[in-house]
Amino acid sequence: MAQESPYSVPIDTTNSSKQYMPTGVRFGVDLLGPALYLFDTRNLSYEITVDTDLSNFGMMVEAGHQEFAETNDNVEYSMKGNFLRVGPEVNFLATDRHLNSFTFGLRYAWSSFSETVVGEVIEDNWGAVPVSFDIENNKSQWVEMTTGVRVRLWEGIFTGYIFRFRFLRSGTVPDVPFEPYYVPGYGLGARPSTWGFRYYVLYRIQWAKKPVKVKKKN
Amino acid sequence: MIDKFWSKVFIILTMAVIVSCGDIPTCLDTETSLVKVNFVDVDGKPKNITLLSLDAIGENDGFLQYSDSTLNKLNLPLNPGAYTTTFILEQASGTDTLGLTYDVVAKLISPECGLDASFDKLKVDYTTYSKINILQTAIHEDVIVNIEITL
Image (tube, rainbow over all chains, first blue to last red; front, side):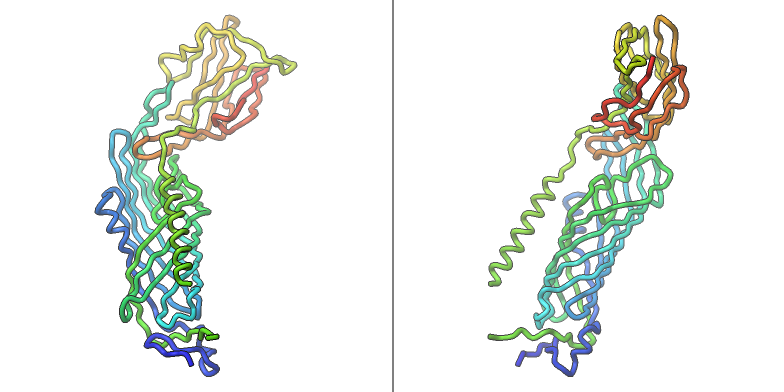
């Protein structure tokens, strides 16, 4: 007989039909973005997450804001924008009674941002050509594969990280001859793929015990 | 068992961090503004011309490297500050013009490296040459010929 916990109940014949009903919602905040800002004041990002459980699957919604700015002798550049990611996850620790998770997930992501750039294009024969753009309503979309771990620390408090691989970026650019440099939530726009890592603290509000599969003992 | 699991996670994370760290921008400039022009005869063989001077409208000094030179290939530098560049080729036999239009997009290589321009969708706007072919509309360093002019 499997042990019960405050957070889960073993799946049996009486409740198996309820295993795909969400039993709670978890809210998270990224700690890494604000922490990195202490070391690199060019790049500021905030991110929050909301997820819910559907048996050993889950649905994630992540939203964030990012700013990047640098001024030097070559260029004055700044970017500011928001991003949103939505997608499912599968939990490989479906038998864990404390709802710890090791997940693989997919996301579809959108971002909307503005860029300002002032500088010069240097051409050997034509010399320095001034460039100045103030671009609003830049939009991008991309796909992500994620993997992550979330561990219950105490009661409803979790901590964990997500590694993400972003690819297939596309976007609409306003009628301005400037290629997006930094895409919020994605990174450098010229890259066909980028990596990301975020460290979260999360709080789960539970309205029912989660039915978990019972690990068979030999 | 759990040790094996976490050691695999650690290895995957370490590899990903190494890949990410290797993704540092460089100032390598892979763009070019040069349109590559070949002069050929009616048989398609290279044909030399003697160029007294090469100028472009809007460029005051001219392209001195081509003054008084005999050649059958020419690299014409497009103006990154405009969508049209008109070149004036002065020869002993007369003066020819070649007006080119194109798309130009500025891009930031990195804040440390500065801005660059990339060119594409090359077209001949007007010319005094009687036979001219665009072989490649993209403008890259690895393009061999963009325009072939038959004399």
